[in-house]
Image 1 (cartoon, rainbow, N blue to C red):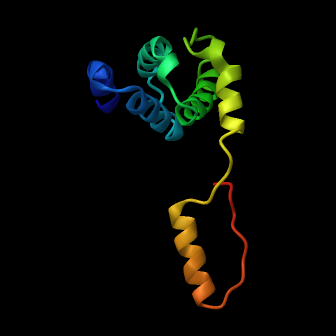
Image 2: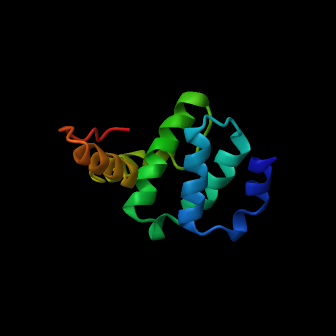
Length: 118
């Protein structure tokens, strides 16, 4: 139902919302082929306005789609290389939650290093 609603309201989404939506569905392993196809097609038309953060998300989505549906002609597949460059160039930084936990651990006297990969 959620994926169907997203497909029906796709015209209301800006590029960031589309990238976030398709990335979120990929993260939870949602297998809704129509959602990925429709969002991929619409995002293809708006590639010129995407920032690196969105392209980085789309790299992960494109990899997910390749694994789940290897024969699907996913509209964004032709841009995998540029998405991968955005992904690799995004840099790794700790999340707010990681920083807050680190502060608390330091207050408790526990020396540690950040674990950046989540």
